[in-house]
Figure 1 (spheres, rainbow, N blue to C red):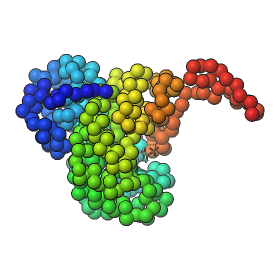
Figure 2 (cartoon, helix red, strand yellow; figure 1 turned 180 degrees about the horizontal axis):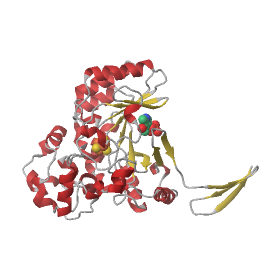
Figure 3 (tube, rainbow, N blue to C red; figure 1 turned 180 degrees about the vertical axis):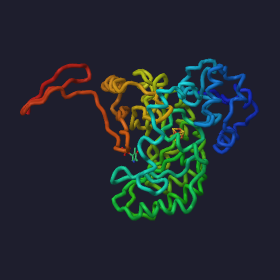
Figure 4 (cartoon, helix red, strand yellow; figure 1 turned 30 degrees about the vertical axis):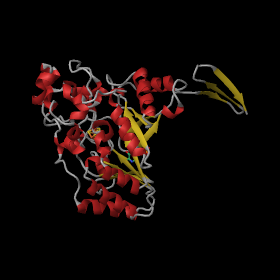
Length: 377
Ligand SMILES: *Cc1c(COP(=O)(O)O)cnc(C)c1O
Ligand code: SF4
């Protein structure tokens, strides 16, 4: 967890004169996104390699960050900083192997069904991609393909078609509003989406997948948004923290505001090589999330996306981390380690092996301390 000084952004010269009022305004954060290195050339200690990577990746996957997210970098000289690595292009993305192995839409999200913006993989829930805009471009993003198109919210007609699909499929109980980042949409548009989903009786749960809590927590200082959460009480929020440095006292404040509206907050982490792929970092992250009252939900094995595979760890690494967590950390803080299967075949959970052997009337287990225990039944 990072405790930020009052006016912590002022240590960065270009934001020296920004007032608290502006800095805390989520719209200011988005309007003042950094999409070029130039303003920060002197601050960030950019290497020649990074500079080349910036140029070479410009057409494939942009650079972009909110001022807030960038300001969480503790030491600008440290090129291995976990936040820097999530937003700065690297030449590894262009590595032949990394390019060859991945695909741009490994889960065939754009093909199921043929309604633009809807992915219907499981019988009872659908993915509803509301916009392809994000306030930060994460290098490991699994929907990189989106940003190759024009970045915009969907049109009213497109939304209507999506609502129609959901209305007709009565098995659908849950809608996952995702993106891009749906919480970058103006409140009016969100209200329009929520209002239309509320008109469909068979929807019990509305899950909003957003990284704004990580990259622009001031989004939740917006009273109009909190009013919407209060009014539309089927809403759950799932966010995406990957490293303890991302959890701050401002996060805590934002979560408190969200929880005051009766909206639960859960988290999905992606296991990323060189960023969070060790036991201690994940343990600390899960503890920080719990302290902030965010429930860890998934820990994902890195998806096979083009230009992302240099972040992929061994499958084993995640199992080892899960084994380490068990018994050391409150069960509330233990996520489900999962792999999303290519071809849109769904997510599968993977666990360390605790059931060693099973007979007709007995079973042998291994506990968290590696003690072998046999039970009879
Ligand atoms: C991940 C995902 C879901 C949600 O899965 P949960 O296990 O319920 O979190 C639903 N639809 C699609 C297409 C997904 O990729
Ligand atoms: S916020 Fe999510 S959708 Fe947007 S770039 Fe990051 S990982 Fe991708």
